[in-house]
Image (cartoon, rainbow, N blue to C red; front, side, top):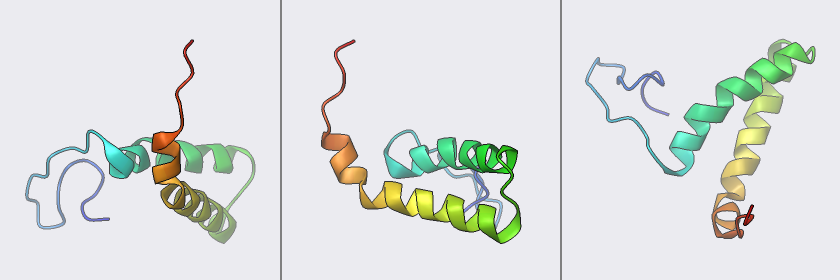
Length: 73
């Protein structure tokens, strides 16, 4: 993914923040997932592999998740 997650490209150009779609999901939940895995004892390559696999699965099923009916609660 381009940029550093704070809205800046590597060259320092301002990028618009992601407001919807998978990129916004990734920016929101990848750091939380990594903190959770770290708290559960995952370190190094295990943490990296587990976080990467979870995000790849989310991307693979993104269309299905978007079409899934939302709870009426």
